[in-house]
Amino acid sequence: MEERDKGQWFVVHTLSGQENKVKESIERQLHLEGPDFPVYEVFIPIEKVSEVRQGKKTTTTRKCFPGYILVRMDLYTEGTTQINEKIWYFIREVQGVIGFVGSSDNPIPLSSGEVADLMRQGSAHEEKAKPKILFDIGETVRIKDGAFENFEGAIEEIDAERGKLKLMVSIFGRSTPVELEFWQVGRE
Figure (cartoon, one colour):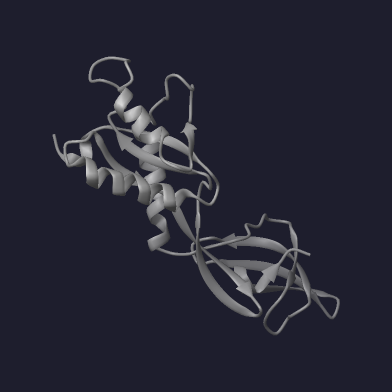
């Protein structure tokens, strides 16, 4: 069995804003425990988000699930529903950890489908930034940048792949289609 196939993924609840410290603390403790210790990996799903601040487009990263981290480990003794006390207390005693998500006595591991979705979502930040604000068709927005600045328009189409919106803007009493990037518009 390969290293990446070992263990199950569990969601660990942490103090909000302490996710990175908890991750580093667990990894530091793992280094001290040695390679045979049955905690294998700690993961924090993040995503890239684009927004306009002070007239400039910026891209930042944010956590998909603030206050939670994922840990791959052998929490249960192999072939049983008996919790391995050493692993249980290893995680629970890390400063900033509140507990496991699920039943307080028997944490439930994530299914392989849930893990695949989280990993895909958490690694998507490497591909393309998504807008901080999501829009709906029919919604009225105000244009914040470009030739039609301060005009209002109703969203007709959303192209999430390209990060563009098609708005119907009233110019001189006539409805005109205008294509803009997500960051060029905002809610009123």
